[in-house]
Image (cartoon, rainbow, N blue to C red):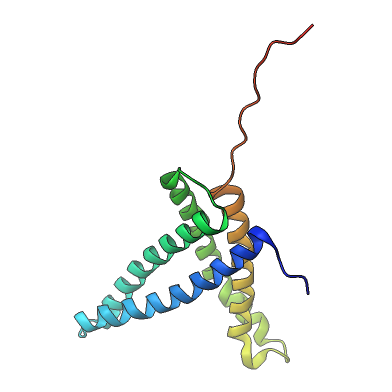
Length: 153
């Protein structure tokens, strides 16, 4: 197995950190919101999800900006572009989980673990989509315009 180098390795490290942070943050926000309003579990879980999602996207953005792609300046436009990478990724994941789970339920070798196999496929796809989206859209390096010069005789 070949170990990825440079940007790809940094992306995998940041992704592992972001995943662990996201899981811990989501559970912490849920616990806090339920602690504050224990009589409204549905509302508080929804509110905690919204708050933790915004926080998780922001932490991911900064880890990719400064650790992976190492860009300077342009934070607001890059952040807005990162949202454009995450939103379709979330939508695609939500749309694919049911049919993928159904597909893996029909296979004898994956029947017992179908939801987990489906989610694993989505995670792999999300990692690839996220890397390409951030590399080529969120943190793309703009080429300087060609110098307009006078042709020499």
